[in-house]
Amino acid sequence: MTKVAAIDCGTNSIRLLVAEADPATGSLTDLDRRMEIVRLGQGVDRTGRLAPEALERTFAACRAYAEVIAAHDVSRVRFVATSASRDASNRDDFVGGVLDILGVRPEVITGDEEAALSFTGATRELATHQAALVVDIGGGSTEFVLGDERVRAARSVDIGCVRLTERHLLHDGELTDPPTAAQIAAIRADIERAIDEAAATVPMRDSTTLVGLAGSVTTVGAIAQGLTAYDSAAIHRSRVSYEQVKDITATLLAATHAERAANPVIHPGRVDVIGVGALILQTIMERTSAAEVVVSEHDILDGIAWSVAEAGA
Image (cartoon, rainbow, N blue to C red):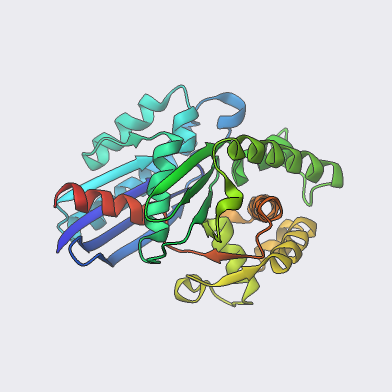
């Protein structure tokens, strides 16, 4: 068994997984899994830069994670950064800060690399030989990956719950809440264009199963079950029908901030963006004619952990 640490830093959240991995048996056992909403991608779509306050929130989380990693005596760590840091002109500030705190250089990976890691994390335990379409709906981007035993096609596109919320609903620092019908139509148009772009590379309708990853999807899964507290075990591998996703999306988009915040399964850092995240999922299901989505709590973070374990095997 090998102890590894994986860190996934996205547009909205930064997550840590410390695990024991055994490549021989294919087992990955969690020792510590945690998440902080840091909104690293705050304003990146508009300014092209990482905001100082967003960097400091991220560095504070890194300091806490460094303590966890040290406590578990982990020998190998991989830090992967995705959409927000790819887009930022000052990403060297981010790279230098992380290196100083954790002693490991963050890898600002491409969308295709992100997609492959997400696919591995989501499907390794499923042991399916049928074609699966994995969609990872993040804060700044969404990855589409089609594969079976291996990745057959992948594409990352610049739609995410934070990016589209800021682009269409944030004006002069004020969020339109709830959004107007015209704003929702504009968001949907962006989603449709991005799906067209992804479909040029990924034959989405070749899949037999749609697997959904990341916070927007898992939150929709929790709402679908009527949970009164977020329960990863109950959410993982649950199935949500298209009709449920459609109804939940409509409810979220019609709700006020206070109404969404009152739902205990919606993390405070997702309250402003969950409606758009759900709309991305609904639109993908419509375009792929998916009757349901399999919700996975295992995603790019698990894929990163496996990449570390297998590199040292």
